[in-house]
Amino acid sequence: LTTNLGSAGMQRAANKYNTKDYTAMSKPLGYYSLDVNNNALLRDMTESWGEGLDHISEADTLWLIARIAHEAWQQEPTNSAPSSEAEEVVDRLHELSYHEKQWLLQALTQ
Image 1 (cartoon, rainbow, N blue to C red):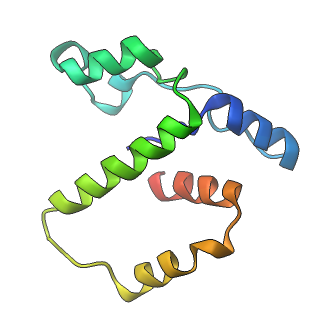
Image 2 (tube, rainbow, N blue to C red):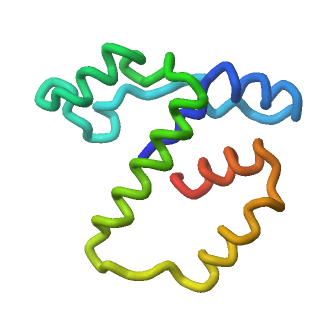
């Protein structure tokens, strides 16, 4: 799963907080071993938002990340419950700013 949290939004955040813009050079989905030519959903996504999903809104990106992550977690092969440490993080997410949550998503997916 890649995080493209909306190029414009991340650029504004990067400028405001004098940090690096991680979305400036999006890679095409094929870079992540996703076969756009043989998967209708992926092809539709790239037709809507571009090869690197550069034109997706920040709101759509965050919503899709949440939905995809939930489904992937339900399909995770070990069927493990979240650790107490992970549950504590969820209980304490309110301690993070909006931008810190975005950056944490990036850190978790790298």
